[in-house]
Image (cartoon, rainbow over all chains, first blue to last red; front, side, top):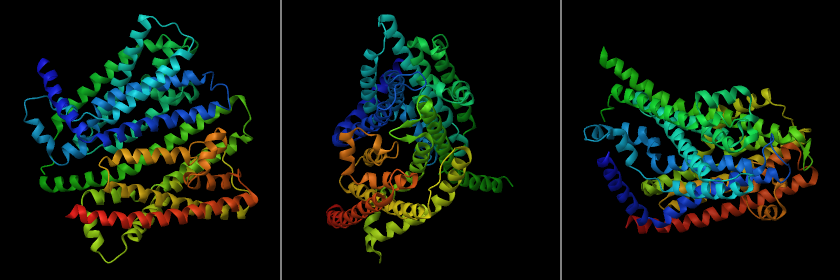
Length: 263
Length: 262
């Protein structure tokens, strides 16, 4: 474990150097991600200029859901973004073969190979959204609530990671599963709004099959009493752990079945 | 026998890689339709109109806008890659005008996209949702012309962003920036009439509304009569201005190449 921590630090240090080298690009990346998020929030704001609530949820409550999703996603984007590239950067050009003969866990190596700068934009905007929304919600904040919020956000991030890892693993059989990963990732857009606005089938799907519901809606519902999901929301960390275990087991299976492209 | 099986399998993998993108794109569009549908249903649960727009018109606007936005992109990405990898130097020696060549590629791609991507999506949308059709043939004709002009404005703008690859390294960031600007200011998410006044004023001076908002408003009846023709005039203005800009920046950029190529 200590060895891995140290190793990760070494990897991270070299990324930092690269980032500082291309400072303008770093800023463009951060700014563009922030603007992207800001635009979709502004969209919700424009709609709320004309109405009071959506399905019983006020603007700031929806902002709160959104903020949890954005912050959770930033964990995934900063540290685990390289999972996206498994197919075209590792398996197709045969780079994975080189990783396999090194004395480190191959998943660790792939993940540590990149620290994604643009994720910091996501993190900043996520915190800004939470900071805007939380004071407007009728909530009492003690140490327990803050601890719970942190746990919920980390769980949210882990679910993003687990789902991406699971579908990236298909690359072992089909060389590059990026289209699948991308299509599944798009599902997370559903999680921006209260799940209660959707048809029951969609709600079930996002809870039990591809659990993006746990990345934003359920964690937020824990803090908002009237949602009626307060108790169910407590399963969020459990869902995160189960997802990670399943995804990692699947990854190991894929790794065993892997035959190099030979290029 | 085994080696031939491997060859067959390899080809299957290659083919699935291409068709996988097609299915992924289709799936993503269907999901967006679903989100749009349920979101606006929930928004209209307690009122019949917003800014005099009823649910049917709103859904029509949003869905057509989403479909049209799929065409607004263009060749910028390919151009940026061409520049990054130095391919552009060879392209410039070939006996054609590179800008026109890029546009020709773009037209080919969009025709295929229309057939494979948009038409199935139109069928799905009209089958499952209550969308309205334009009232008169004149409106349909106006919409088609306006949509084509809007798409070309989008292509020109995309080209401009692609050329930026001569000066920046983080092409991905610039693209996200561009897409955000377009998504937001083009009125692809929500009719611009819903914007607060100050923002609407800004939007009217930008080229983005000419890409999506104007054509779709003609289609869904938010803009009618002489206003529709005025809108077309605004679009033509942007079309010509952007083309001039494309030519200007391109000739600047080509000078830059000699520096790169040393």
